[in-house]
Length: 525
Image: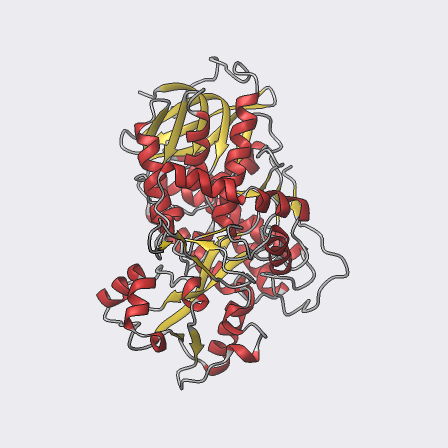
């Protein structure tokens, strides 16, 4: 039998953004956190590099803002960039107070300052990190605090199916309990979408299996606008290995002196940008893609072996250990790398308080479009965005009417007209087809013809999936496929609407910049 749950705040997603909201409202509100796998299995745990913040006296807010605007290729909202950077120090302090163990420079007789590293697009060392596993350190700390907080109730192995919107307000969500195979009703006065991005739309990605665009799809179906979904960031350096197709080799490796090489040992990035390996990610990824296609090679190579074994082991212990497990010694030889889908720069449109177009519904983290990233996210700004906007959303939620949105007349999920599926092969087949045509036609380099082909296939897939959804009981795989197909269509529509090449969107049919930089906004209906 389906169950009914009632909370003040429902947070859908358990990464950095979702848990940050939960912890900051839990002293004054009853919070439910929905996690579709185990806590810690989301993208936050996979983040290696760190968090960009102005923490050093030689750095400045103006400098961080300028670097972000430059990387965003004219599409960043400058007021949002400044708002985010101005709140960077307090966000880091909040994490330190929670217990995140950031790497320090040990000074004799004192506790030591934090070690700050350099990453692509930045003009200063401003990346605070926990060795090369910052995401894991942050995630573990947030999880530990959430598990012991009496105001937070965590529901693992639950996946949201649809939002409940009645009377023009979001009042909760229907949620599939994966273990009990029932769709339960979670009622709340406020709902926060923090489900991450949609990089699993692509065949090759650095993201975990959970990155299926669930929040973006649910928000769209609920009536929310989305923006700039054509800007999909491809990380330049994913390890090229059959047993580690999603293993990212951190930006910090290049920040600390790693160079990119062709198979013959030639360094090629100086030919593409004055900053060479430290150019913004879109330029590095496109350069690698160009060289791979020009030479017909499967990968390029990232070399930091010249820094010596002690340096490599101390700066990149996680990457070093994983590569050794795979028979690769990065302290002795270059690593084979390829670009892979990494980050969704667009998303659900929100204001500075995290509010979407639907009252009672908030979005934070990679699910949301804030205007921070523009046409290309600068390295390590994403985690910062999570904490800054989680804090803003939490403050707005707590300032609202505690009784707003609470209803008890929402009906249970109706599964009376559906049956168990005997054709699950349709799901797996459609999943593979979707990810393949997105990789082939909506990748690093695009054309109008490729995008139109992709859109035609997306429409056919959506029709098949919709029929399947109407006739069979929902499963986690079906929910994810349905969401991913919708978000793929929105990505393609956004790409077709942009008649220029800017940042992460590069099309051979429109290779130049348009005279004015404008966001791509899609509206449901």
